[in-house]
Amino acid sequence: MRQVEIGASGRRVGALGFGCWRFLGHELAQAETLVETALDLGMTLIDTADIYGFGGAGFGAAEALLGEVLKADPARRGRMVLATKGGIIPPAPYNSSRAYLIEACEASLARLGVEQIDLYQIHRPDLLTPWEEVAGALDTLIADGKIAAAGISNFTIAQGRALQAHLGSRIVSTQPEFSALQLLPMDDGTLDWCQETGAVALVWSPLAGGRLGEGYVPQADDPACLADVHAALDRIASTHGARRSDVALAFLLRHPARPVVLLGTQTPNRLKAAIRALEIDLSRQDWYSITEASRGAPMP
Image (cartoon, rainbow, N blue to C red; front, side, top):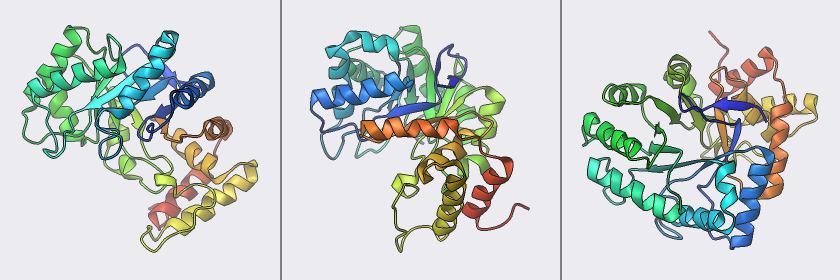
């Protein structure tokens, strides 16, 4: 699989990664199959968060399940770049204070059963903690060997730069929502910032919560552009002998910021099918036609 640099971390991962937002409620054997399938396909970035499971299986449930998968076969740890996130703690809702971040990271290490997290990201910006304090927590975690690198998630460019100003190491990643229905990272400077700094964008919800998948029927509360985006994706898919979702993923992979696209499917066959997106070389005209369909207007 095409490899992508994780900023200045020295680590490389596949352009498609496995996201654990819905990695819950599985028997251990099923969870092992999902992780093994992802790794065998070259999806070497495994992304989770301590909040995944809250409101259902429980806070930390996705990390705990992944920890069981790693415990069942410790060799898996060496095959992946392990990423997790902290800083959301309902009902606060956010806490990035030095004391809490260190405590949260240590709890993640315990649930995952590992000595070091490859990439630790602040899940959402805490507006009440000074950036100098957030940076101090991350620098301490790196110095203590508990994390190898730090990143951000759902941050604005200004917030990321303010944190970087106090951080001893480079921010190596940012995690935005990006899809053919959500073009904000192209417009708000996020993907430009990635190209400026070398940080990688780890894209979540690349199929817009399933709305860009096969068989999805637009609902009354969907964006007005959805039918046009479907039409553009389907037209291009037909020329490549591919699926709508394949083209939707290829659209993201075509961007020069070289994002890593996180797949949240909990079906091994769908993980295998997603590899088709890497084989689709979208023409410049096709890529812009999807962009125009999403924006509802021609490029200026």
